[in-house]
Image (cartoon, rainbow, N blue to C red; front, side):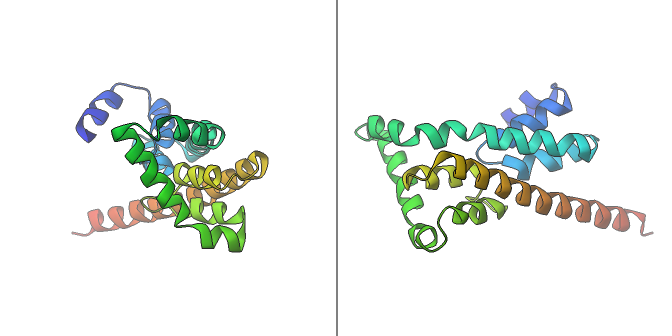
Length: 167
């Protein structure tokens, strides 16, 4: 599947690649920012594209996850997937009870697998958090994650350049 994604993105303009990768649930800004850097885009272009596309892509999840979950709960394959997503969100209940909506910010800000805006938006939807506050916390979390990903990517480039320059 990754091979098909790379082939599909290969002929697109670099800005579109950043937007698409940043909006996808698996890669989010963790994929969009490094891809933009590899393709030679300047950070002043990459960051707004990555952050906005990541946050905008999850708005339908925040607004519609519970409605969709109710309608798909009795379907064999999709119902199981929804049940797993809800179970994963409910596992964050202690964190949400302790820190409220700010738990979403923290969860989104950590750029690791199965964290990010997509999972954070499911958590927010399952716990019925207010849309405005959730959107703000998602945006702040994505900005923090973008800062971390950018820093790590720049450090990786420096390390690679240093290793490549070594005779």
